[in-house]
Structures are given as C-alpha cells and as structure tokens.
Image 1 (tube, helix red, strand yellow):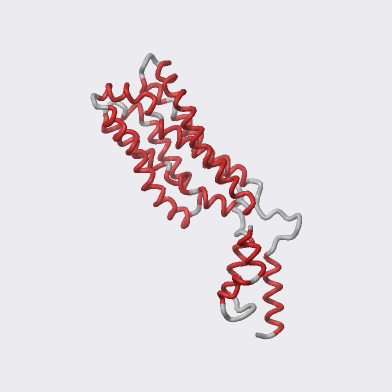
Image 2: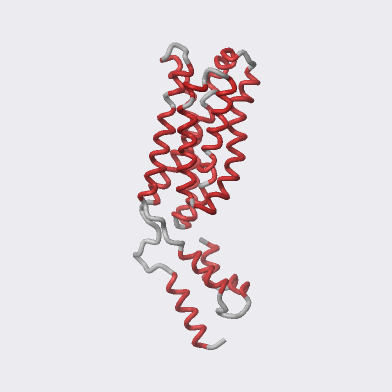
Length: 252
C-alpha cells in the first residue's frame, strides 16, 4: 500500500474524532431520556393497575381471582412481550421517535376506552391487549436511545434511569388506584378512567421529541465503518481489531 494512501486514510480517520470542546451529542438527549423514562413509568402504572383492586374486579365480573389475573394482567404482559420484539425491528428501520409516537397513540386510545369497554370482560381484555401493544416501542427503545443519543460514559445512566421508571409507576399505582376507586364510592371504572391522563402526557412528550434535531451518527461508529470498509493499513479488514483506536472504543 502506498504511503500517500496510508496518510490519506489516517487523515480521514482522525477527522472523524470530535475536537476538544465540541459537543458530539445534543443537549436534547436529556429530554429524550425524560420521555422514555416517563414511558416506562406509564408502563408500570398500566401493568399493575388492576392488581390492587383485583378482588373487586373479579367479583364484579363473576370470575375467580386467578381468572382475573390471567385475563387482565397476563394478557397485558404477553402482548407487550410480543410487541417489544416487533417494535425493536421497527425501531431499527424507522427510528425511535416515530415508533414511540405510534405506541403512544395506541396507549391513549386504550386508556380512553375504559368507560366504553369497561362494561364487559371481553372489552376489558381487548383494552389490556391494546395497552400491551402500545407499550411495545417504549419497552424496546432503551438501547437504541442510549446508543444513538448518548456517549458511552452516559449509557449506563440512561439504562438505570429509564429502568427505574417502571418500578416507580408500580409503587405509586398500588396506592393511587384504590384511592381513585374509593373517591368514586367503589366505582373502579370511573377511578381508572382518570389514569388516561398518564397516557396523554406520555403521548405529548413523544410528540415533543420531534422538536429535537436527530443526532449525527456517533463518531466511533463512523470510525469503525471507515476502518472496516477501507484497505488501511492493510487489506485484511479484521486487522482493525488490533489497532489502538479500536482498543479505546472497546474500553469505553
């Protein structure tokens, strides 16, 4: 390989590394973190919303507590599991923001349907399935948000903060749902209808993410792509893994 080609390859590689003092990731990334964390919070709320009043609901529908658990909680979890896998593939293709907005729309529709569908067990099961599908994108987006919007030293923080949202949602709902039901003299459907506010706030946050500029491809990904597709410093593309820049990337 000629010296001129090697020098040009080195120059192209160094040009990808951000200069000191130049931000590589937008400040808007913190709003993205707030949005997905609230999405996890909302998922925790709607996952557990029936649990504190399950005995009352089971008696209302004339079924056992075990049947109520299967139909109103397990269906949510199962549909969410399926939707999370599909959402991961959609996020890879279309990006995080369109997918979480679509999920937010489904979630709002399901949450607002409680007064309409709440009179029948089949209607409530359909509502729970729709909720599980709606939370699929937010369940799948943590790694994509961390990798796309945050530098390596902050990605563990992103996963930790986002993961805490679901636990907080569960904890608060265990107290809030019985209180809402009691506020309406035991009418759990009326109390549950107010939780649609959580879904609406989540959708608004998802829509506001469109105001932020999509970050550029992180420089480390550009570097690896360049090294893998070029002949620098030799013709074997696997040789890049013994280069110091790659050691630094793996160490970060």
